[in-house]
Length: 101
Image (cartoon, rainbow, N blue to C red):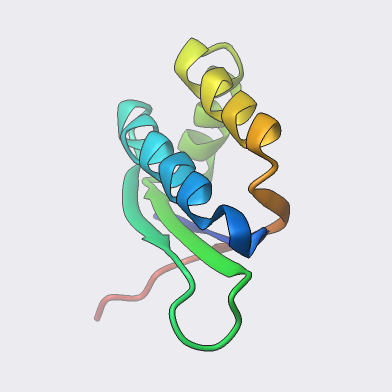
């Protein structure tokens, strides 16, 4: 299993737009075989940092998701929403191997 961690720098004035963006992606990750662990919005501390975590059974499965999402209309609409609202300033993506026991 591989877990993708995305750290977003968001526009805090557009928190509602970013929350909507996150709600668009949760079912899309599931649609392509992943398990979404949620988006985490600012609460205390920095008001412009948000996180997302989702897992796939393997890096190969994640890479297949990346290929498929580029041709998917719903995924493209989610990307377009973020672009139009400018709720995301930047992001960085890292991968982790979870340990449960």
